[in-house]
Length: 414
Ligand code: SF4
Ligand code: SF4
View 1: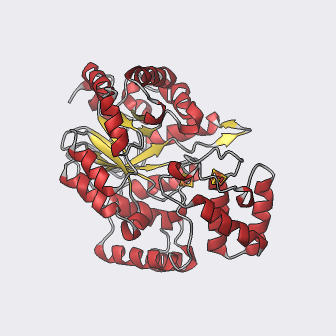
View 2: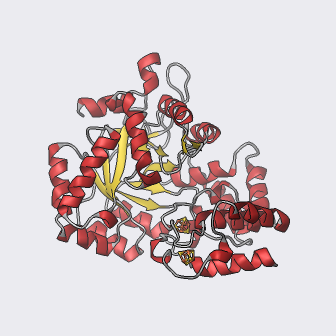
View 3: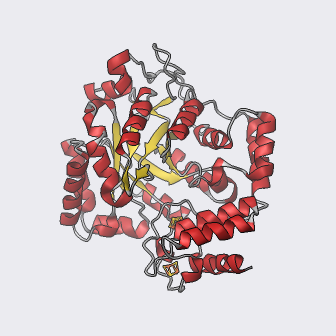
């Protein structure tokens, strides 16, 4: 274990002030330490590929950072970084395209004030913006400049499918990234993927990957093929980094009936904590990312993960029942990732879907109409969709966006 990895595995920002102790690699993978010597709760950590480098099971996703007056709210974010690091959450996940580049800039402005050894940084190369090896190099250098990180602990090809993977090989982007890895500027190379399960397997089999980021949550496990995807990674011994464990917030509640089922079993546990425990119970999961933009969400997540207690078999059954109850009320599987915007006529796609889903949950038609009226003040709503289809190929959830917009427009009129 080199010095950097040792420091990352044993230090948080709080450690510099209060001798905090992170879990060591020989701690039980699914348990970790619940508190450091000073009594600060510490999230469960897992060893990276059987080494003594340990990574927190809860990672801080920087895709939906809090804002104020049209800008990122640096005061709040800085306090959240402090709180996260003190709890051992020292894995931060950003990307070139997040928040128009401001997510990476925020890393450079706030996280980079901390000792570099105290955090792991993951960022991603947007192949959509890459048409040559020189493009990849330019973007990579821009990312280093924005984040002031010096090196990336985890570097991903962002949201690639089989065709993108062929493109990155044809353009010799892979050779460039391998060079960066040899230089130590990339520590681990992986990719995130929303392509078909078959193509995920082809990409996994085609290269020696250090890790892979997939979408996994109760819904995609029960109603999609997240289990098969997870198994592909586990069989290939590729650690899984999980995005959307709450499916963009949808799994923070299982509806009235589903939540009641969960509270009957654990009155004090939030539905979101069940969703996280589901993901954290899987042994090949290295990190579950949460795009935390509120201090109370961060605090609740720290409680859930300090330590992460895997679901028992009977709890798994309860969660399945709650999920089945939630599916009686249909909702649109939008995660709020915002890849589909901007829409050429200004439809605020994820905002429209969020309001429609709230209506599906609450059944309050008046509140829904009022919410749509308010939304219309800031841009286009469902009725403005001209079915151009420009958003369709951008949606990783494969939502039939124009069809949904038509249905929602009818709801408002009805
Ligand atoms: S199909 Fe509708 S929502 Fe999608 S880009 Fe076109 S106008 Fe916008
Ligand atoms: S509609 Fe699709 S692309 Fe747009 S925010 Fe929702 S999940 Fe993301």
